[in-house]
Length: 267
Image (cartoon, rainbow, N blue to C red; front, side):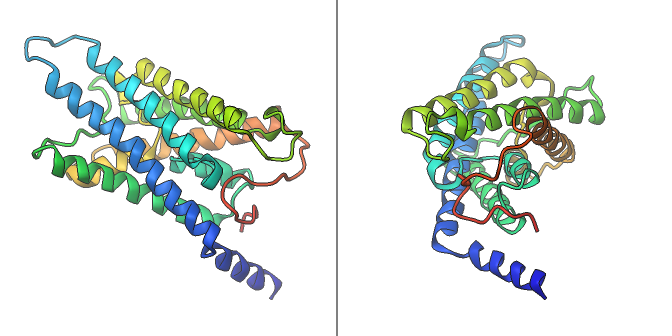
């Protein structure tokens, strides 16, 4: 009976005004990131001449765009929803008990919808340009692609955990962070994203974000190897959350959550 009451309380909290603001923040920030990530890929493809087959310029351009895009996306949503911008990040925080499962589901829905709307907007406003999807290199297997995505996502999510640690913000561990600390953390996350794209963009597309791959697949109608971009990032994110809890804060008491005004209880 008590567990049923707790579940009802958590579900009620999912529809509170602060929670709804968190979902909207995740939608907008994910839209921003996916719009820049996929849009830069479209622009790079349009500007690449047919006689240039092995230029690194498109990879560098998309890496820079994704780095700045994620930096901005995390920054604008950090104080409202925690700035997840990625279902894998939300999954990691759910495993760590920082966000309840019901709220995480709404976060995922907001992120997937934001990514899909971003890709749909690009398709409509770019004179019908084909939306590029993430895909693995011809020489790679699906398993190898999933492992690569898992490793990349581990690095990204571990960075997210480190820069969002309240004890490192100079706020005395109270969970309050100034704008400078938030901006520096968002920059570190963005730089990690860009570095990972440079490292493995030619192998798997370096998605690290199921929503980014899902949105492009929905709009383009090509779902090949979608499992790679879900299994790899989710496993990598889970490992990052567990490793961070074991290594960095094995006995830290529950602190004020920065992932929206929701109770940090895993149901």
